[in-house]
Length: 134
Image (cartoon, rainbow, N blue to C red; front, side, top):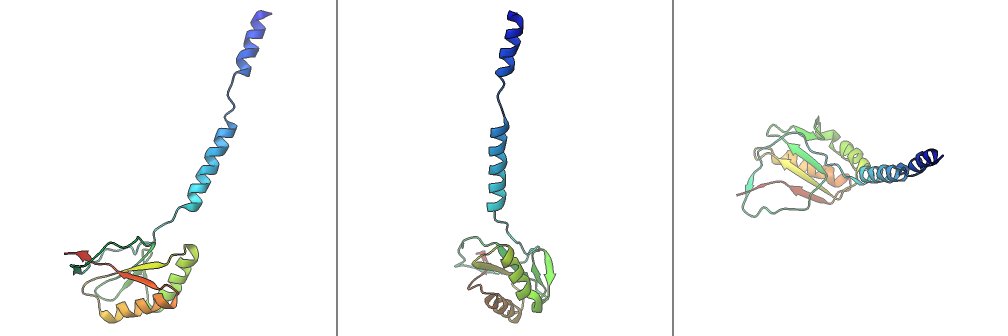
């Protein structure tokens, strides 16, 4: 009889892992929901050099302009007419108050101004132009 009682005590000594797993899954869901994702332009451009370039707070949305005037947003080529609509859809997914334009140093000024106008029309007031430090 003493033998049966010893086995019964071992069975009762097991640790219930269910509450710990619940906490881990809740923390995982919390971190997934609160994570912010950066919407990169998708291409590298040769940025102009500036002696007074400073580091600004990081942004979530980047827009790249190539030397030939082609605009890239979220790793896809975008027409100038569709920049505002694409930006509004990106803002609906992840609101932000700043957008960074990565214009190539050979990009035409007119294209950069049109992109800036589309950004302002989408409701973003803070626009930064990316440059490399000399």
